[in-house]
Length: 192
Image 1: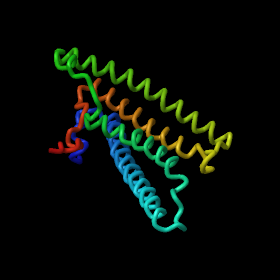
Image 2: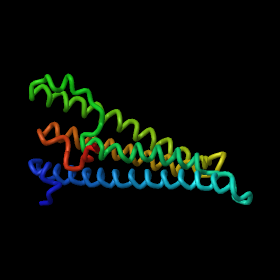
Image 3: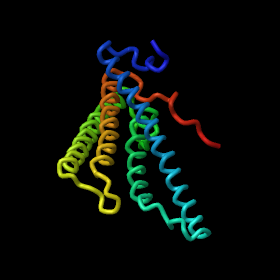
């Protein structure tokens, strides 16, 4: 058994497999989000460089035509792809004032309820985003400014939402079974 799966070790075998698979997808989610952030940064640096060079060399274009549009796609992808891993690491903003005052049994019930509501809400959002992307695909919608097929960035965002919904489902199952809800080993170290 790997070190990472020890948090789900007390779960029954089929659920442990599901939880470990969701955990791996959540880690993939984080890496994809990081790659989107790096790509966004490189795109903005390229835009700045091209703009600066256009002031020196008149034959250099003043901008990259798709930079702002693709930056918005990448920013949305960063948010959706980073969300599942952030949830598992315990990095989402939470109001701990109430949770800190609850007895362990009440706190567990609260976590179960909140995780179920979040699973249903984010699941609905993921389905809505998938339908949105499918509609763009079937209708052949393209961006006015770049001609990009809109189903591509919409499908990317929908996939990130599906991963977040799966992570909330895993949290719900973990709360039901009394397993740790967060893996602090993947939390970013504080910057001082």
